Each structure stands twice: as C-alpha cells, then as structure tokens.
Length: 270
Image 1 (tube, rainbow, N blue to C red):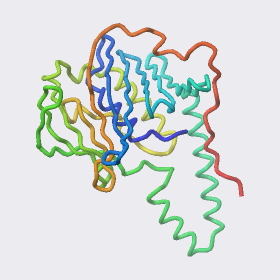
Image 2 (cartoon, rainbow, N blue to C red):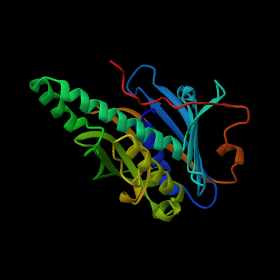
Image 3 (cartoon, rainbow, N blue to C red):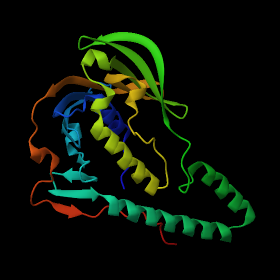
Image 4 (cartoon, rainbow, N blue to C red):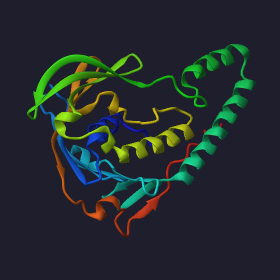
C-alpha cells in the first residue's frame, strides 16, 4: 500500500467544504521548488459530487496515478493512464491488509523473543514509537495564527498545520460564509474519512475519523504553503471553484484497463 502523501492530504483539504449535491470542479495550481532557478508548475483539478471524488493533474504531477473514490461503492482506484492499468482498494483489500499486519506483528514478537535481553530492550523501546499494532499518537493539528491577506478577492486568515511538533504548512483560509458553502456540503469527504479510517486501522495506524478536519477551520484554504525545515518549498493555489455537470466517466476506470494487485505487506523472510 502506498503512503498517502502530504500533498494528497492538502489537496483533499482544499476541497472539503466545496463538495455539494451539485457537481463541483476545483481548479488548482501547484508550484514546487520555490526559490530555485526553475520552479516546477503543475495544474490540476478535483471533480466531486455528494458521493464521488476524482483528481487529475498535468505538468510534473501528470506522471502520478490519478485517484478515484466511489463512496456509493466504498471503493478507491489508483489509475495509471500510461500503463492503462489500475489498483483497487475495497473492503476485501482492507481485510486482507489487516490480516497481513497481524501476521507481521506475530512474526516480530517471535523474533523479539529470540533476541538477547539487551537487543530486545532496544527493539521494544523503538516499537513503542513505531508500533504497527497500536494507534499512533501522531495527528495533524491546526493553529490559528491570525495574519490576514486577500486571495482571489477573499480575505483569508492564516492557520498553521502541525504533525506532532513539526510545522507542515501555512494555510490561508477563506470562511465558508464568504464562499457561499457550508460544512454540510462535505458529504463525500465524510465518506472518504470513514474509508481512510478503516484503511489506516487495517495498517495498524490511526487517522482522524474525518480525515480532512477542515470544519475545525470553518473555511477553505485558498492557498496552502508546504513547509520543510522552516522554509516554504511549495504552494498550492485554488484558482477557481465552479459548479457544472461532470461526465460520469470521470468517476469510472476506463474500459479495457487491467487491474493490478496491490503490494502485499508481508514481512521479509530471513
């Protein structure tokens, strides 16, 4: 199972409150390697309705798999158009991952029992921090900074996101009221939160139930600035939010694409 990238989390966050019963398209621009001589720019879009969600990128991000979530079927697909293939995560996949993690934990305990006392103590101490068998204490927290700026004509307030003690991003948030949306418009993201909660639980970790807790901010980040070692290294800007019918094919794997198995999580053999 591939990791959910920080960018993926931020992109989901950008669209949280924009989801509504009508189809919604959010156009974005992401700039990587800020401060370098050749920043890399990608443009993308999120398409969503009350039960479906899909992403598509051009530029540097185009090589990445696009993602489709079907809340009405409780399934997620990672689609690779170059290879004309896709990977699928559904309830059966989650159950299989849970079994693989249980096997991995059992094998790890057996190996620990065979270690000398000193090495076993060191390994157990490390596992207390990275134990795959218990919920992680790590979580994403949002802190209101209070600085303001106008983005796209909307007055935005700065929030900072932290993962444990590490600053992850600056988020410039426009209030729901200014954008004519509300937390109730986020039906698909609630379903995604429940789905990811089951998925991360199967992998032995924990994630906030809502997964994209933007209701804590009472608005939408129109600008997200990624922070690495105290410096802003990339930013994602929401350029537009529009409502118009979206083709049903946007939320389907194209006909003829071959399904590839998800990577297994079995521990390595000695």
